Image 1 (cartoon, rainbow, N blue to C red):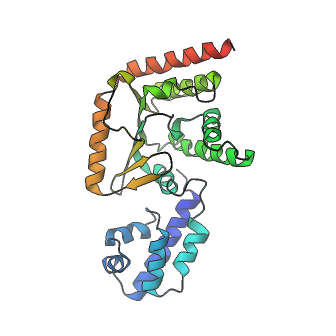
Image 2 (image 1 turned 60 degrees about the vertical axis):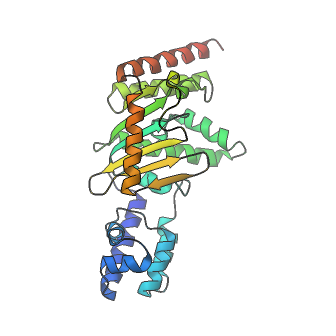
Image 3 (image 1 turned 90 degrees about the horizontal axis):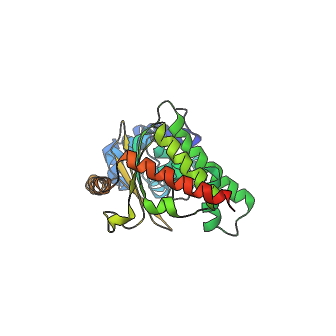
Length: 277
């Protein structure tokens, strides 16, 4: 998969960091200690695997006495993303993940959305937005989904709460198209889709979405999101708890075959409704 401009920016930052760190005579561990992160994190920055944070960039400038070059690099090259600040790193990590597991309680996951569905969701959240803003959001969401078409696409597991299938986002025609798209992804074995029935009642993750990501050369991460913010988690103990939560959700879902039948049935209902209005 071709690298994104953001990935190129991370690698430029990392190369510059390694050069200046070694010139100053610091090991990764020593620099990490002085800027309040682990030496392993400094290594991930230098390899261009993880996005550096602005406060860390500023502390690196202070410790290495670089006159603000890392903060300026961050502001000019790295802090340019069409996504919310709390999601930009997640979007980049999706592009290098080998496996992604998602739980969606209310809305179709971004990687599976159609343009019309994404537009309806964006307008619901930003009813006074300009057309340009809406189209930027829709385009960025569809761009993310390209990873599912790449030859190195991740293994993609999705749990949809039944509410996702029943909420008429954008109206019957938009929902029919959205659910038909999900069914097509499942039939093409691009995604393994299961549905958590409403009849289950209380379940293991009652607040917001949950995303787990695994990688070839770095530890797994978890991401949770509510209405106004999201949190990327990489503490091993916390990620392990998130993985257990996902396992509990998975054992409560319908089989893939029964889930696909339910998705297609809901799509047919919306398509029928659309044809009569």
